[in-house]
Every structure is written in C-alpha cells, then in structure tokens.
Length: 112
Image (cartoon, rainbow, N blue to C red; front, side):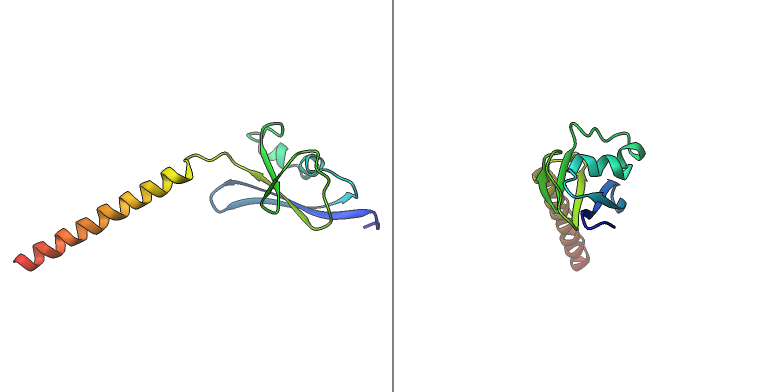
C-alpha cells in the first residue's frame, strides 16, 4: 500500500442477516462512487442503481462524489419495505392481541 492510498470497506446487505462486504485499497481522493464501482458490489447486485441508491459512510448519508478518508466504511442502503412508524404500530398491535389472548386464557382457567 503506497502512502497515498487509503483503506475502505464497502458493505451492502441484500437481505436480513446477509452482508456483502469488500475491503479495498484505493488512491487518496477516491470518492464514494469510485469505491462502490471498484468493490464489484454493483455487478453482484444488479438491483442497486448507483444513481438512485442511498449511500452513506459510517451511517451518515453521503453523495456519490464525496471524497473518502482512510478507514471509511461505505454503505449502500436498501429501500425500506415498510415505514418504520407503521412497523412499530403493527408490532404494538400484535403484542396487544397476544396479551389480551393470554389474559382471556387465564380468566377461562380460573373460572373452571
């Protein structure tokens, strides 16, 4: 690794608990898009449109032309399938139904 090189990681999760992660050595001044292209992640996952994908570095949204620093982690974010607020509501509703069912079973046992 030449002194003008940086080490970065590109990560994409195509599904739950699955991560495609690539360690790269790039020239200093490399951009988010250049790292994504060099990683081969786009080739392995054709569902990624680099012009539309949400990209980030260490959990913070970045633009494709942003310059990377040594030890950066470039992340490609999937679109959300469910709005987080709606998912929370659904989990809460499901939990409430479970609690009510348990309470009804308990009352039924006590009345016998």
